[in-house]
Image (cartoon, rainbow, N blue to C red; front, side, top):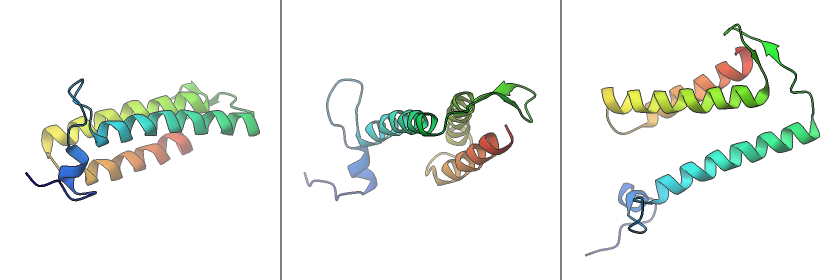
Length: 107
């Protein structure tokens, strides 16, 4: 059996162990989550002032709240995309980025 070529779809999805079906995609996902929380912490440290503001959702939200809403919404966007369109997920990624800009600007 030939090893998958680096950065190909097979390489990203290649199992890395037997527990929880870890692969490079799941590792990249968790690194993104931890990284975004870390960036939010650094942002708050250097620029305090995450005072709540009322946005289009008619909720008082802070930066952290908007980050959580962005992550939660992105999960639903990806799940809906998989259910309706299947793979590849580039369209879901674009919609999630648009969702992120919307939530942080007007949410």
